[in-house]
Amino acid sequence: MGDAEFEIGPLVNAVKMSLEGLPNGTIITKVQPSRQNCLSQESCIIWNNGTVVQDMFLRLRNVETGEVELQLEWIHVPGSRGL
Image (cartoon, rainbow, N blue to C red; front, side, top):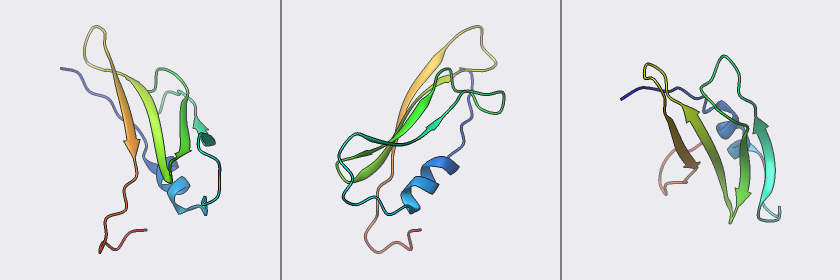
């Protein structure tokens, strides 16, 4: 099956920012591929329709070949402690 790792810290940091009022599609930050992550290409964290979204392509490890495409979206759950 393979496996991959990614760092959620940049997404959490973006959620903590005051982003209301930004136009949809605004790139908040970019995460570059490195030896410390499994990204196969640059990953952008974007303000989209009032939420923070990150699209990423992860190169799988422990297999001959393979990639996984993910989209993370921060969702505020009513009644939760939140950030």
